[in-house]
Image (cartoon, rainbow, N blue to C red):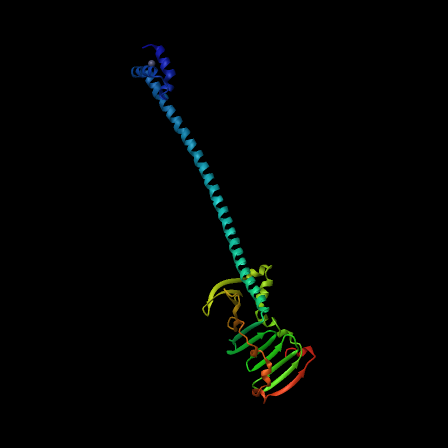
Length: 310
Ligand SMILES: [Zn+2]
């Protein structure tokens, strides 16, 4: 065995370990290693060194990779939180916008309907109110019926009946319980055409809240009342509330409920009908008939505006 071969084998040992030799060189190195203890030892040392180097590199890499993973996980976690917060904010804004839009829609439709009703030439409105006072346990009910046809009114309120006309200052009050008829001459504008429907003024008030954030203080729900699908607009707090019930199809206010918890409850039910009032319903000439012949009749002329509420 030539010493020269040993030098060659040592020179080639790295390539041999990494399997980068041609088959002839490989065979030559392999054969030499089988027969030369010295080179075999050199080869073994070299082999284990290279292996150790590799695992060290691997460990270093792994530590670096782990560190990168941690940083990436951290960034992903922050991303998730930021995206979640953004989603919550967006959902919040959308929810409020939808709520605002829906309430505005209901109010606008009811308001437009009210304007339409004010211009009608023939309508009847029945208003039935129940008042309860929880403090003294008292209760009373009021029923008012308005008939309107072509500029003439009849208003029934309990035992009293009033006749009015849009184009005159005449107002006639009939008190059936007193058997008395008062003929007034004064402008009672507050009861004339369209003004009767001011009983629905809450709709108008809510309409004027349109541009204010205060409309967000209103809530909207859907419920049935007397078999009719309604929107219910509530304005309330922990002590009291006011609910306006609006017919979903007709857009007319059907009911209004106000309550101050443990103190007071008031509920009004409205029945509105178009085109059912007849001429005789609003004709005051009936007062000249036999039926009213025993009634005491008075002419009253008032010029002082402080008597306007009579
Ligand atoms: Zn050798």
